[in-house]
Length: 153
Figure (cartoon, rainbow, N blue to C red):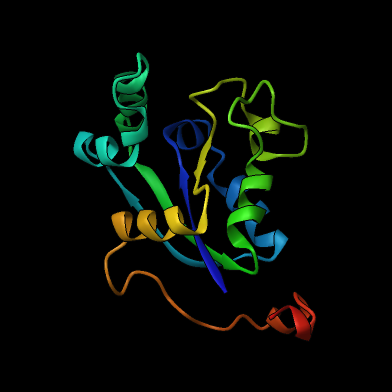
């Protein structure tokens, strides 16, 4: 099973969309393996968004992610990284397809409701960045046998 990171951004919390977004991932069949609320720091954001360092929007991006607490989530499933990215939609809410999280709830490039890992490699790095040992759990959901065909696992 593949694991991926989702951050429910301040825009998600401030707009009261936490339940709706979480519901969508669970209804899809992704298993919630870890979840916690935390206040991100400028240092964490500098590391997390290092690829944007030096760009004009870098500090604004970090400020937007630290204005309120966020909820970090670990979701698990077959092809979880790709599935979550498709569900999140295009980075810009204005360009995201209807039916995606950003397409349904965002009009912004920055205030776009969720962060989703963009690769298996980055998911592993990001999960270690935001979760401590013992904060990601392994358990079997009763419906698990009805989510995948035997040859998909």
